[in-house]
Length: 366
Image 1 (tube, rainbow, N blue to C red):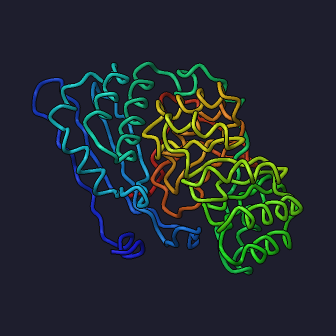
Image 2: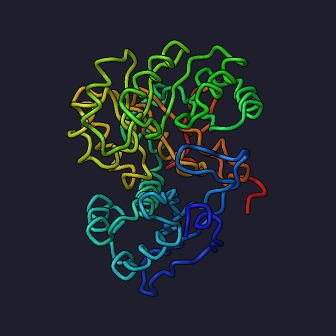
């Protein structure tokens, strides 16, 4: 089955039944199909929608909500996430949600891979706990929401006329993120520059074919007003990164090479910064570990995202006061967001002041 066939496979909402014992939580999973406003194309794939995995954790009259965006490259799907969580249901319903660090350690020991499932559960548990305490999650982390950075708005690879339309639609965003890495990079950047002179950040998604091509393209991109670039070469190719960095002038960030906390120390000699994604690492607890580790190693940090709803984006946004850069726009790329959470005002992330994640169901959402 190829990537496009896999993405088009139908999925359904599936409940994860609660144990009948007194005081046990009610846990439900849901698979939602998120429809994209525009076809989303990167070096890796092109799609009209994404299926993401939701967890609702209810106990003591409080419901925590979490979401993870499965990544096919890592052999994850919304269905595999559901099956993974179902496999530990008898153990999970007997755990205390207040001891969420211990609980998530147990989940990591019991579930192989399926980090989007772990992320969804982690987010739901933290949402539940912060709601129970009556505080927003950013305050529970001891952060100041006014420190949240600007978020970029992402422009996928497309034809020049469509790119110009996308850039115009992103007029309120002071910084744009542009996907490159195919043979039409010059056309893509020219289309962007025909509409705006805003600062740009670029993600090559491992698309450059050699270190020589990477240097040539990065130096050209710098002249086009690009501030930094993500993952120019395949994730496994670290040896060429220092060669590249000696010949370019803008920072280079690890993206596909940076999945989990253990990756950060080994990447430090090769990159200027790392892109941390909650869906890839398995939740907010792991993401916070990665951010703190990167800081201790002198790396810049960007908080990124997958295409997902306001649940996952709002969860990540609660950590954004800790980082230098944010690319938290996945919810803005979809047409049927079921929730309202973090808002964006001229690129500035406005974190909710309501308890927990601070989510509200979007009126009319199914």
